[in-house]
Length: 432
Image 1 (tube, one colour):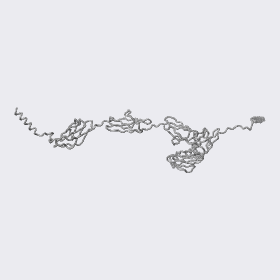
Image 2 (image 1 turned 90 degrees about the horizontal axis):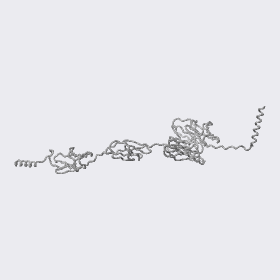
Image 3 (image 1 turned 180 degrees about the vertical axis):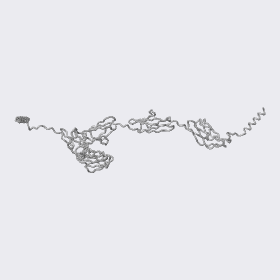
């Protein structure tokens, strides 16, 4: 028994003098201490698992005589993997610190929404989320429905895909809802030229439909009267009424003519004398024009000449809008006749045409006589020059005829006596 114990102790002493060998590598031992902000992270050296962090770190042995490690990888589910290069290996008994910080994997995304105009109400999958500009955060990755709404504009819709850790950008451009109303324009006297926002529309009385719902500038012009201007607010589905009372201007010796042409750049002639060209924007004004009737011709290469007769009154501006027509020139024009009061008979070259206000189409080009007649008023006459494809205007201001009183020179009994004698002579003639 004693002999067996001695042999065993001797074996232990001998074993204690033999160097230890790990995994067949051998050599002195140092350590890598891998620090990590997350416990439970797995650590790999050159792709080989070496341990799991606990309490903020894990120690991994390194043998000085073994093959040195080059790369480190630290990973844990729910976090982005950390990869890097290892520092030089530790010498025997040394500890080398390595630090790895893991970032959590983003699982949500966001949508940034803008709109033109801004302030649109934004709905995500039908639920109101606020007004643009707006950022909707913490969205689970996937496809969402977005809607933008604003009063007075058409709503807009789109779909957007949200990805983890990313922001999707959406821009809405809303289209205004066009709304219309009507404007009915009258004037005293009637027959005034009507311009809305600088564009000729016709002559009073006039009703304009499909007028956009906003503020518009209405201007009226009539020879012999001051120009009239006002602003009218048009509301969708409502008819606005404009009644202009024009004020006569004192008699002067000259006036002016404003000429606009479509297209622009046309030559302007007054009584066949060249005046200039219509500008690309605005009007061409012929100043110091003698009071009376004049002929204006607007000509542009490739278009039919526009010729019209215009009456010029002192200290006023007459307006001409020439819409030039391409192609071969027309051989006829029109005459527009108005009267104050209206309802008068119109004769062109002594041929009855109708009752004022009246426009006669298909009138041969050249000079024509216009006569306006109304019971109780003196006839009114003028001559107009009709241009090809244009409308000449004649505006008659009728004067009432004074009532004739019976003659005071013949007494009533003398009239009765004359009638009696005449009857007697007729009776005698029949008897014969």
